[in-house]
Each structure stands twice: as structure tokens, then as C-alpha cells.
Length: 472
Ligand SMILES: Cc1ncc(COP(=O)(O)O)c(C=O)c1O
Image (cartoon, rainbow, N blue to C red; front, top):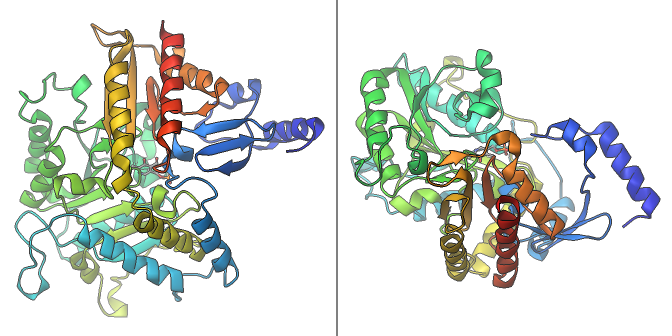
């Protein structure tokens, strides 16, 4: 903590030099910035000494809390060996160790059909789990890698024309241009439309505002039928379906109804397109188990991981592909079957060391086994808050929740987004020691998995009061 003058100076420097992401800087310049200087467990401390409960896990990344001793130590020990060396032409000890751990984790997680003879990819509905790890350094690059891999895979298989993707409305896969092309959030993506590649868009499984005007379960998955129609017509032009399994996170924590994800897997198999599961937000326990795909026993051909992979410590990502995809890239040097992709900080050793420590904690502390009472508390809270006059819908899976505020509950009329209702709740929360960040009119709850029941109760109490104070 600095002196009052030093702190004011920092605020001035921030305003003078920093351009913040996803932020209208005109608004930012008018506000007092919260400048974080320290963290501990589920709390963040600003330069003035105020503590905030980190209600969105520092943008969905933190898993075991801040300053977790085991992760701190692992990073320090790695720092004593080497901070970074390239993966282009070299390998590194923690990158190898982590790759093995990730493959074992993915292998053991979903129930998948037995291997067929000769190690061919298994049963009719499932490939074998991804077993090769391609590192990068954030969620968007994990997705870029997946898209390029899927596209090039079909070329190597000698099947031409699969030059597009099928993605979902309300989907979000990151901010690089490939990821934006397969995104489906108008407000974020519309501006860039002229330089995006075209993709096929299937309806979002957004039951509260079903674009097909159907009601679950009577709809019998009309949204999947719509996806099937696209695939029936166009599968020879589609390399892969890319999906956020179970929860369309940035789209507003939209939780797909049970059976939807499995249905997507079945369609991918039926129409011979790859399935890319973007588990960047849902991976590493957020939905109550390690990976969201496990809830429905789904095995994708490609998985994208990032965010929680390092426990929220360092930028790292992994795109995992099946043996079948990997093998398609093997060939003579002159055949140019190489996967032409790689980033400077790919597989950074500090990040890999943090990730290994993060996985150790999952085992040692039985993190997933301990989530039950927290999820129970969150569910009870949501049930209760759903009764409020301006709460239109509540959605959750595991320790992820979205509370959609509406102007008129009976007609589902949304608040005009310019009214910043979600933000007003977030500002209220900040005044009361809680940091949350909304998605439009959706109040997001996504605390670190390590949050105590007491702190979770505090978080939910402030959110409830915030919603009441802003909407009533
Ligand atoms: C599902 C999903 N994919 C990809 C990304 C992009 O990750 P990053 O912000 O690390 O590029 C996000 C980020 O929120 C995400 O939620």
C-alpha cells in the first residue's frame, strides 16, 4: 500500500497509459479505477487496502484461490531452473509432464466405448479420447489451433471442400479472428463481420428465449433438428462443429438442456464432421466435474483448454487432438503435412509448472468431491432469487451461474442494454466488498472452486441485495 499521493499517481498513470479490454474508456476515465495490489484466497486487495471477494475468479480463471502456496512454490522452483524456452525445436520438462497428466485426465474422465481392434477409434458414436497435446497461451489461440487443425486434417485425409465450420448463435470462443468467426454474440462480433470467414450457425440451446419459439422438453430438441438440417445439406463443406459444452458462457451462462450435448456428438458422428469442445471456460471443475463433456459421456475429437488450467496463475492453453487427427499430419518433410502453427510462449514452463501444481491440488484436496455443499448452496440461492420481480431466468451448472434480469417478467422484455442493469448490480457489489462482472443483463456468479461456504454465502447475499436495490 502506497501513500495517498503514490496511489493517486498510479490512478493518473493508469488513465494516461492503459487501454483496458472490453471497456468503454470514456466511462473508465470518469470512474475511480480499482487497482489491485495483492490477493489471498478468494480475495483481492486494492492499493487503498480495501478487500474484495473475487466473485468471478478473476475472469473465470482462478480455481484454488490466490497465493496458493503449492502453486506459488511450483512457479518459484521452476523459476530457479528456467522461465522460458521454446517448444519449436525443443521440449521442456514441465511441458512433457503436463501433457502426460492432461492425456491421462481426459482418458479417464468420460465413460467411452472400449477400444476397437488395432487401436482404431472406438464405437460408432465416439472417437477415442484426445491423446496429443498442442500448447499455446490463451483460450483464443487454443481455438485458433483447433480450427486450423480440423481444417487441415480433412485436407490430409484427401477429402476436399471442408472449408467451413458449424458454430452456435450466442457462442463465444475468443477474440482472435478465427475465434470471432465462429462466435455468435452480435454485440461483440458484428463490427468485425466484413473480415470474418463465413460459418454455418445453428440455434443456441437458449431455452428461456428459444429462437424457434418452442418449449423444452416438448420441443424434442428442435434446435438439434435445426443443426441436423444444416449438416444434412452442408456436411461436405463443414470441417467441424465447435461448441462450448453445456454452458455458453460469455453468451450469458446459457445452460443447454440435458441430452443436447450428446445429441451434438451423435450428429457429428452421423455426418462425419469433427467435434471441437471448447472447454476453456467449463474445464477444470467449473461445472462440478473435471470437464463438462463428462456430464453426458461425450468424447470430442478436439478439446480446447485454458483459463483454469494453471489455477488462474499464468497464460497457458492446450488443444488436445485424437491420435487419428495427429496421425493425418505425419508424412515426409517434403509433403508439407506439418501443422504450421506455433507461438513464442507456447507451452511456457512456468505455466506448465503452475498447471501441474494445480492438478496436484485437485488430487490432494479432493477439490471436486468438496463441491457438493457449495453447489447446493448456490442452487438454493438461485431458486430463491428466481422469485424476485425482475429476475427472468436463473441458470447454473456446478459453480457457474447466470441470473438474467428483465424489465418485465411476464413478457420477458429485457432491460435496454444501455441501462447497464448488470453493471449497476456489479457497482453495488463493489461498494459492498464484492467484485463481479456481468454479461449484459446477466449477473454472473463464478467464484474460485476453493471458496468457503461462509464466503459463498457472503457473495450471494451481496448479489441478492444488489439485485433488489437496483431493480426494486
Ligand atoms: C469458451 C471460451 N473460449 C475461449 C475463450 C477465450 O479465452 P481467452 O480470453 O483466454 O483468449 C473464452 C474466454 O472467455 C471462453 O469463455
